[in-house]
Image 1 (tube, rainbow, N blue to C red):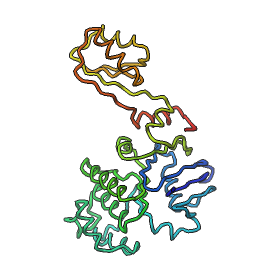
Image 2: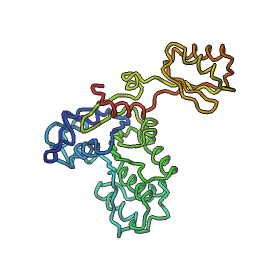
Image 3: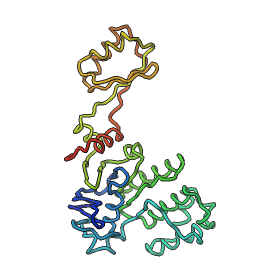
Image 4: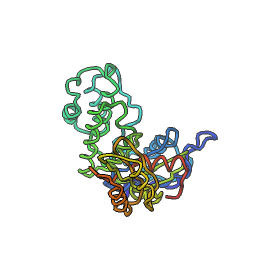
Length: 306
């Protein structure tokens, strides 16, 4: 079953078309990454899903219900972390959370335990106006998950966080997903998205240009894996031997490591060529295409129809 269904979504701002005939789905229980350059239409799409903007045309359903016709019922089961988190600066962290807990009909008892989990317990009675960007971001995540929503919509959830904060948020997302929460995640940190998302959608200039797993998108674009080979010593003879192997599309050299771009079936031939050229292999590993490579190829080349 699909948790989110978007059909032919279009949104105009005056003469500017921010989102153009976008359709995609998010399956119940999955983590879906939504990617695109700045100004691509990500936040507009998210606001449309939440019915925070009136769309020009199209249809959006959450858990089978039209969001426009069933707005209150739909929103009861959604937790939302906006890109720019805002709280009442003159209230403490706990007072802000109590406010949101009351709105969501959630237990106030959740608030303190979550503050402790997100390393904010010692600041529970401090005014939020004194908080750092990272503290505000963690407080925003707490606000989003109050009441145990079935769907989480997160717009740049790790923005402004230090590495420890990023790990904390990532682990919480994975924990919630294991408990059955569907997660729609927009982020610029492609490595984070690749690590935790089941599928991704890529939007560019208001148009959805891809929707699939990273592995399948790589296959459609014919992005080859890289074989990273660490050698005892690199010579021109070894490099020439690698270049002559049929199926090798390119090589990059860094100190005693050679990255060879080729299909997996060519790997054995590359190893033989190195050994025949007198090379001694210390370590060898295959690096599958990254989400960054997929993202760049789609957005720079304007590939469509995936």
